[in-house]
Image (cartoon, rainbow over all chains, first blue to last red; front, side, top):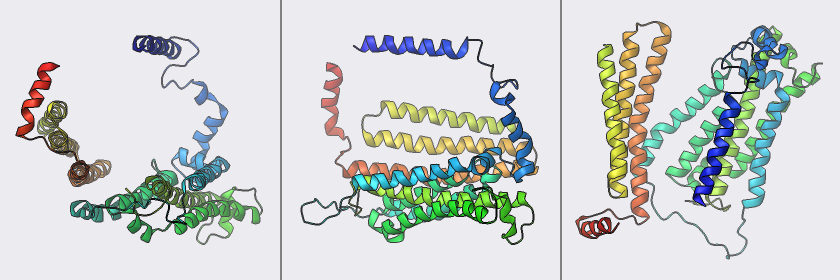
Length: 253
Length: 116
């Protein structure tokens, strides 16, 4: 059986290697004539992103502006994933039937002190990644994951009750909803000012200190990323809490 | 300066090699974590130190200083977090009943090796 599996893996691997290497319809690595690069759409983005939005990082501009609908509903997908895990896993203890998981060990002094030192820095770094999404790799999703990890670290180093005292289940759900509302709010604001949904350029009429549509798009992207970060942070933390405690949301691990 | 940097990086790789051998050859969980934790921390810091020195030798324009400060931060954080995570793993292993191997355990293990 093992030999058979080995043969199958080997053959499939060979076919894949043949497929990606020797056929002529693939362009060679890094060539400027590749179809993805030659299409008028990518040429437009390469030439006009900095003119349209003042954002040096094309990826962020495409993600949060040109392709704003997609990113908005990606955020909704994350929200729905959190809701789905909540609906499937969460157990409310009505009777005494369910087994109560208690943390039987005290939090370790070395671990807690290192976490005390590191968690503020992690959160600061999360904000840096968020705010630097315009000019370097980063953005709302990545910053949100780092921020969520800092809360998970609290839950790991002490226990979930202490983490929930700082960021309760209810607050987490409210924050995840607020994140989507911030995103949709930027879209709706541009609708009310007379443009299409998520066409941020028009917001410069109400943003103080911003006089050009380009800078308005720049700042609206930052706002949208902040919304994404709210959602991702709270849903990350919720998913960890729910899965680690089998839906009881007390003590844990 | 570049020679010193290269020496540091090579030294780091030697320590990494030691950590890998320790991870594979030591008999139980605790000694393995000991090799992995110590070797990993020291070698990563040495390699990053080599990077820092190399960066330093390339001159001091703005981009280089940017990289240098980031590398220093990475080294500091690895020195903080790597021993802590090793400690956490050790404690978790000890509390979940993973007893360290002692002299008493040695003979049966040798027998097992002979059998296999």
